[in-house]
Length: 309
Image 1 (cartoon, rainbow, N blue to C red):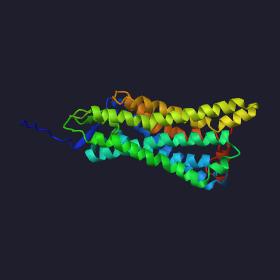
Image 2: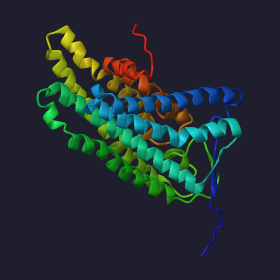
Image 3: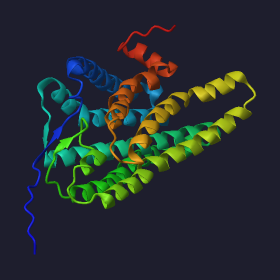
Image 4: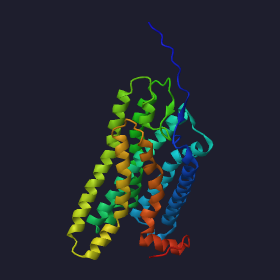
């Protein structure tokens, strides 16, 4: 029996944006500022919802859970990217790589399902306003918040296990700024066909399924809003869900493009910046600063002084 001498990879090298050497410092400054604002903004959202009595409602409860999720999500990848940009910290051990891969995908899938839960909440509020309080109780809110974490950590585990089971004997350079399924699978010495197939199937349940649910909920919402005769009534109804719809569209568009066909193109890492840092950075502004209730809560707590244009 022929013996093949192969060296198992002990660590990976994250290439990140090494091809943009002249812009490394600029990228570091921009991403660091966005990261700090993202953390601070989402912490402010959580604080407001917790302390502002006017925000003690299911909608803001889900927004606060989503804000906490965003903090965890960005912290899985961005600190390592910043170290890579400024201090050439581009190496990551095999175990840490797959730990990052699993945490990133599990939290990312959780965001997908949490956005679907938030769309479901808005659908109930607009289509069943009289029964809404009786349906969305504290117990139901808690269950709906836990559900995305439970299903997502299970879904993310399957492709992670299949990917980790592949043979890695070199090369070990990942053309990305974090360990993700497709870039890692492309480095395998063994055939990644099954792993790629499992990843694609998991992506259907991870991102496409909740996306279809969101489309269904918002179709129902739009039909209901269209039946409202008052312009003021239409604007009020739509204002409660327009921000969420904006974030959902941005997030799902980039995620579906990257993950439904996980072939690991050169542009995946640029698309990944959209949902790993840009959307978490925008989230506090999109969800809160255009909301009258949140502005009032800010003013009462003297956290920020907002000018209303």
